[in-house]
Image (cartoon, rainbow over all chains, first blue to last red; front, top):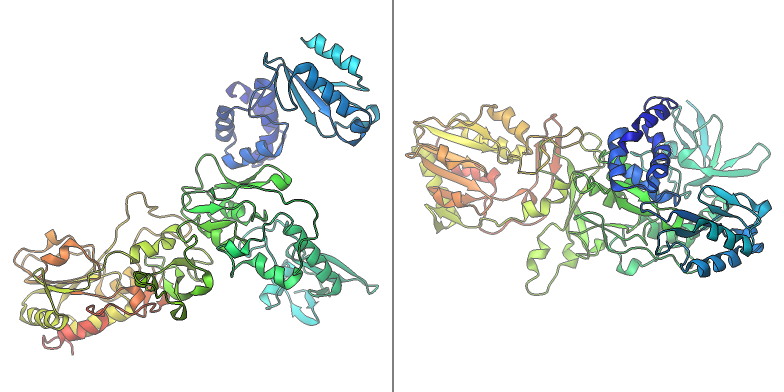
Length: 154
Length: 481
């Protein structure tokens, strides 16, 4: 985490003095982007750097399911299962992805390549069903397209 | 000064007060879970809803804890709309609560239980299964947490952030998975005030491990007392068995004369609504093995005989010295002064010093002087450190904590102590004395505030009260009458 401190310093300039606790969330995001998850040593480092109570970092980490405490596969498939996507076939997408990858939602394939997650609304109901592969949106998803994406990532 | 009307009663509030504060100050009750007079206002429980009259004769509802008073405001605490909202809120708060009052230690002094009868009184209308959470979770080695009973009012969390400042607790996870948890850095286990969260918990979620399943609270009664743990002298309630609920089973008699738990006795002049964990552990301090038999040079003797022997030693002494206890009450200290005057050269000793690992001093309550009445004792006898002259031929030691090696070998020793300790046998005369829970009295704290403590139990048969003992010791010995 230490090598990110220059970036954190820049972020700090955007907040009034004494608002260190407001930096917990952006710093955790940056740490996760860097490492893929938030490790124990990152928490210790962030607590020391920001001077906030450790419990505050723990609360944020546990509140937001997007923040991870463990590493995941190289390709993170996040299938939306909110109402619009479900009505447009998301359940089938999830079932198909499970079969293709041999994992249940929340699990990572044995080769460490894929992690499958189900998520609530991705805010793209007009193009449901939607799946994210890492940071990219794949809209109006069909099972053929899903197969193609998985092949491409292999 | 805004004037407002609550339930038809006109009151004058202070500018900047909330409706809850103004109502409380004027003795008008509005129910609350998450609000606490000493903590910040999160407004999360919503049970303190009140109605506010609108110009057109209507009424809107808002939480009293977070609503500032304003001039001419008309507030209802018990309108039909308010009652309906409260009832709905109670249904919501108990949505996942197990309502297991029958096996809960908090029953009888539980806010949720009281409000349930007062404002709801109905079974849950929910058709969904209750969410299950961890039970018997060790929040620290002093406190057990039942997450199913928790209503997430966050009083405990705010206490550790705003009062004890340990930042030891937090609410992790989200929504109905939320759990109160201690920080992973162990700051809660080191919080010297952690047990206060048990008192401020409005439900049975946080319970004392040392008191767990010991007694139904209605079998106990509180006696007002003063914590002798340091010179702050926090006022406390000592809870012990009510006479009508005395245990009669063989072998249980000791439980009738023991302090089962200690809670703060709110006192704005000294400790506010808090005490430290050392105060909670008073039962250990007060439950130590007692000296109950007088001794002459280590051999058991009857009390009148020992008193007579001590009296003649004091009378015969040419250079008598007294080491006075800083655990004596003001009454006992005054009795000593009245009995002996300047006949004995008196020094005040510290009966207790900080224990290893104990918090010595902090900015909230804990004081470095671990004795309750140093101020009262030094006011009468000066604050010179005990320095026993080499030519002293009699030393009267009152209370524990003196190194007997400091006493000249030729001097006779008269020792008054309540506890069973090795020094007792080294005295020429040993007289057992009563402890704080066996008499009434007062202590004066470091700031000069005097607080009263009252008797909880009768003293053991062979034990003397220092207040009446001193005149008896001085009677034939001259000095003051």
